[in-house]
Length: 342
Image (cartoon, rainbow, N blue to C red; front, side, top):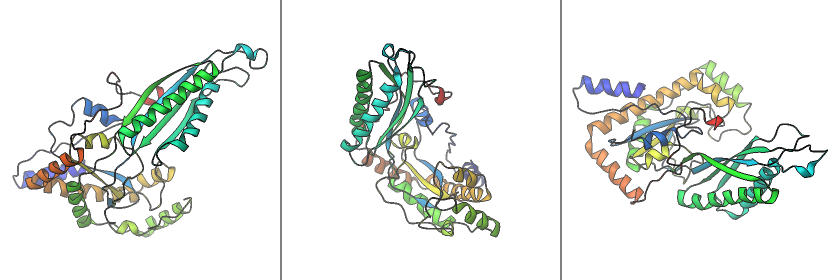
């Protein structure tokens, strides 16, 4: 928001034409909010999209993310007294556990970049009652969506096997799905140039003490270490950043690029209590302003140099190569008000 306001004021002060759209995008984690926004046409008419993500380093990336399909598999059986008359029951939990076991066996026979992970969201109510209902929340990821489609079909077969082997019934509902990220090379260069202009930042003595204390709770130390937030690292050119993001779906519709700013103490694990602690600190606020300044400078560049936008569009056309974007979230799915309840 700070970047959008700063760039808007720059345009007004210099009497320059241009349109800036600022998007609030809820429910990235699990809700695939941007997918539903894209489906509603929210990103139509955009020439270029730039964004950022919190992290432990100041760095622009051309690496992709992992395409993701995730669903809740629900097993239904027959309840019975687990000791008095177990033969009358059909355990939904057994069906779930058999699916989980089949999925573990599947790991050996999928491309090595694949990620399969899950949690049991309902395992029954009491040990002495054969569970008539159970639920497992399953994720599957791969760098390429077409390959993931085949992997996902096999995950579903694991669920069918669990039901068949235990005399239960299985149904599943897709909760979310996102594509792999296409970081636009031209926009990456714009972001990198401006991130280097802005630079990193130093910790105060108090912030350094906080960082040192927090780093003691890390399982492993960062390769860069405390102090690396003062620098801008070279562009990350690896194949994948490892995680999944609904920004990726936007990147298949509009030229898009993303970078990270050092809002976390270097070495902080993502999705951890330590990352939350950093985000609410002065370290998080300073890193956020690095991102805001980088975005505002990049916005001005794109708004005042049409050649940059045309180059970004050409790279987008090259990267997509005529491939069709089709979300794996069912067409009749509605944005979840609370995806945990689905």
